[in-house]
Amino acid sequence: MIQHDSNMTDSDAMLAALQWQIAMGADECLAETGVDRYALVERQAEERRNAAQAAVSAAQGASRPQPAAARPGLSANAPLGAAEAAAESRKLARACNSLAELREAVEKFEGCALKQTASNTVFGDGNENADIMFIGEAPGQDEDRQGKPFVGVSGQLLDRMLSFIGLDRSKFYITNALYWRPPGNRTPTDGEVATCLPFLERHIELVNPKVLIFVGGRSGKTFLDTSEGITRLRGKWKDYKTDHMDQAVPAMAIFHPAYLLRNPEHKRLVWRDLLSLKRKMEELGLE
Ligand code: URA
Image (cartoon, rainbow, N blue to C red; front, side, top):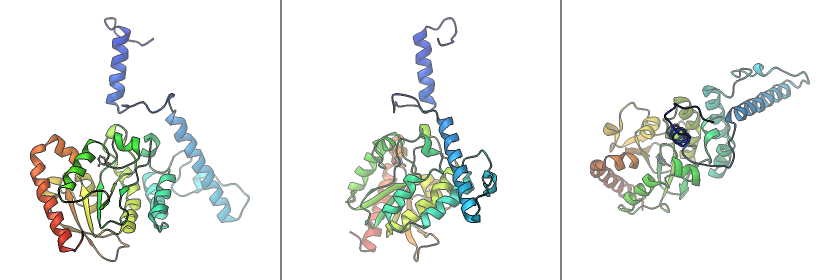
C-alpha cells in the first residue's frame, strides 16, 4: 500500500510514483525483475579487493595474505576511485594494438560507474578505416538500447546533415567521449570523463583519422582542452594531438544535433561548418 495524502487515490499515487521515477531517469523497462545495484557495487568491490590481494601476494611471491588496503589508493571498502580508474584505463588502453582489442578492453572494463546502469557498451560505428572521425558526447536511450552511437533522433539528424556533403557511415567513423549512457542523460562527472579519456585517445590513435570533428560543446571542450563554449568554439579549425601521435590532426567542433533540434535557427551555422569540413577534405585530397 502506497502512503499518500487522503485526497489521492491509489492510482493517482502510483502515477505520481511512476512520474517521479521517469524524472529520476528510470525511463524504460529493461528486465522483468529489478537489479540491486548496491549489492552489485559491493560484489564488484569485493572482486577487486580479492584481485588486488592476489596481485600483491603474487608480486611478493608470498602465501601470506595481504589486506586490501595494501594496494595503493584502494581503501578497504571502495570501488575504484576516479584517479585509480583513469590510471587503469590508461594502462589497458596503451596495451591495445587494434580496434578489436580496444573494444574488448572497454567492454571488460569495470572502472566506470556509468557501466553499472547502462544496458550496453556503445563503442563505435561506421568505417574503421575512414579518414573522418566524429566524436559525440555520450550515448542516449536509443544508443544504450542498440549498442551503437547516434542512432536516435539526433543521430538521424546528424546523418541527414552529413549526407548533404556526401558523407555516410561507409565514409566516416563515429564514437562518443563516453562509452556508457549516463542515467537519465545526466551530465557526466569529471571523473567519468577522465576515466574514459585514455580509451578515447587510444581510439583516435587506432582509427588514425585525417580530420576530427567533435560533436557538441562537451566533446569539444574535453578533447580540445578549452573552457570556450560551443558558440565560440564551433567552426574554428584547431590542431589535435595525443602524446603518442606523430602529427597533429585538424579538428573542429560543431553544434550537437540535439541542440539544433531545440534551436533550429542555428542550422545555418552548422551548414557553414559542414561546408568548411568539405573544403578541408578537398584540401587534404580526401574523398
Ligand atoms: N548524443 C551523443 O552525443 N551521442 C550519441 O551517441 C547520441 C546522442
